[in-house]
Length: 76
Image 1 (tube, one colour):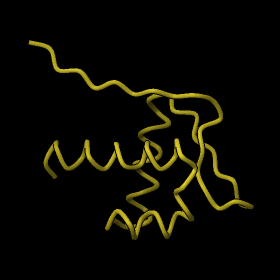
Image 2 (image 1 turned 90 degrees about the vertical axis):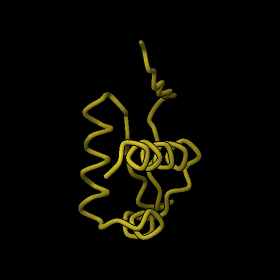
Image 3 (image 1 turned 45 degrees about the horizontal axis):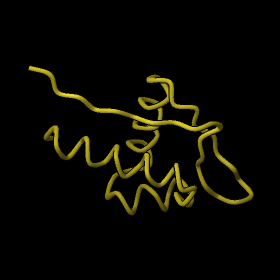
């Protein structure tokens, strides 16, 4: 997978979590055109980077337990 595609996926996941509009894991995986297991791996990667991701089974969405910002920088 290209770096651009990978970063785009993480940007989309971050936006949907931030706006609490992910839907179920199955729905989000389908929207991203990936398997649920790949989605769970991606969420685990974000959590490993310190993202406080939680899931609300009543509202059926992932959310951040507190405000999060990700900055991607390219230095020369």
